[in-house]
Each structure stands twice: as C-alpha cells, then as structure tokens.
Length: 291
Image 1 (spheres, helix red, strand yellow):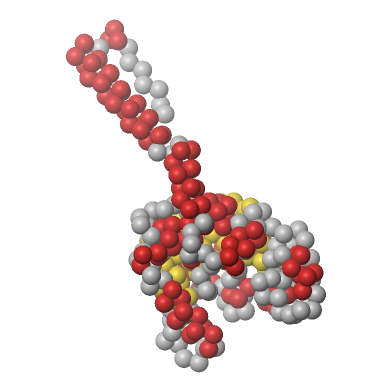
Image 2 (spheres, helix red, strand yellow):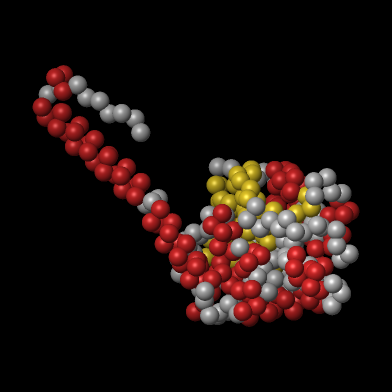
C-alpha cells in the first residue's frame, strides 16, 4: 500500500479534515478486505470439506481409498472453494463426485463431463457408466444442481458454459487421451475456465523419459509430458505436489497400473504383494489459465 503523507502546515483546515477522513476510510476498507483472507476463513472451508468426507453417503469401500487418494489435501491444493463452479472430467462411478458436488452444492456448481450417450457404437460400459452417473447425481438433496455434460471430441467439447469454471479437475485420465490426441480435451478445459481459473491434474506417474508407447500401454505418464501438453494448450504450471506419491510403486507391473489396487487385474496372483504396494505413484499438478 502506498504511504499517504499530507503536510499539515500547507493545507487549509477544511481540506485537511476531508483528506484525513478519506484516508481513514481507505484504511478501514483495506483492513476489511484483509480480514476475508484470514486463516479462520480457510479453516471453515476445510472443516466443511472434512464434514463431507465423513458423510454417511460415502461407504466403507470409498473411505478405504482415502489413504491413497488424499482427497482433502488434494482438493485444498487445487484451491477448491464452496462457491466454485467445478468441472470434473470423466467422473466414472463418482468417487470424487461424492466429495466435490456436496461441497459446492449450496453456493457453487458442479459439472460432471463424461461420455456422450448419443454417439453410436461405443463400448457398452460407457453407456452403462453414463446412465448410472446421471441417476446418481439426480439426488438434489445431496448433490444440489449438479449437471452432466459430455466430452467427446470433436463433436462434444462444451463441458461447462464458456469461461464459467473456477476449477477443472481430472483424475487419472491423461493416459487415455494419449491414445488419440490430447489437444481437443485440453482445449475444452481452457474454453471452460475463467481467466485465472485452475486446472488440477492427478495422474499415474511414469519414470522420466518413458516412451509414448509405454505410457499408452501402462497407464503411467511422464510428468513432463503432462506439463508440455498443458503448456501447448495455453495453461501455465503453478505448482506441483507429492500428495499422492507412492515410492513403493516400482511401475514395472505385468498389467501396468491396473495390476495394482483397485483393479488388481491379476486376480489372486500375487494379490497380497500388490495390496501391500497400494495404489499407484501419482503426480499432482496445478495449472492456471492466464488472465
């Protein structure tokens, strides 16, 4: 803040009084603005998020995965606020939906952008998953005005009203985009975000220098690959965190990332070994759409 200096001896009394009143009002306004960003406000939001995590709508199976996915720490890192408009890309069965949508239900807006039902000849699981998700978020008491949108380039790319989203999040989707062209998916993210909006990424992390073929096959993606693709779309890296790191993950499993829980593609073969490793080693990246 600039220093406000008046030389009393050079001002008429009336003018000095008016300037003094103006300066005092400005100081009061600045103090009020500062108060809104105090730790107390942050703690209130965090407490509400913890309330959602402890909610009865989350079953024991969902809670068991908190130790690997660290949802509170991850969403706080992504700067989630209860007043945000949030887009979740390919929410699947809604594990993160059960946290984000209730958190923003009262004062924000949730969009789940998934597969499009009107595209023919897709794998049957996509139709089943999308219909199930639609039914799930119809519970207005829990999810508020949660909405479904579609992300299926090139025909379906409006995942939220343009420039409306404070936060877009994607959890473990980049490896699928690498099997085609990631650019249209990231362009949809940029179109949905407000200037200054956040793009949060959690993704299975490959070792540096992994080939495109190995990333497509294993599900693990090199961190620098994600950063470069986001930069090409016009997104700037703000921060990275090891919230979801797992140093026990050697990343050389027979069925790639799906060898580990929760998939456990090998069935009973070495099941205890893979349960002991836990879920995959994951990058956690935060990007911003520049003003």
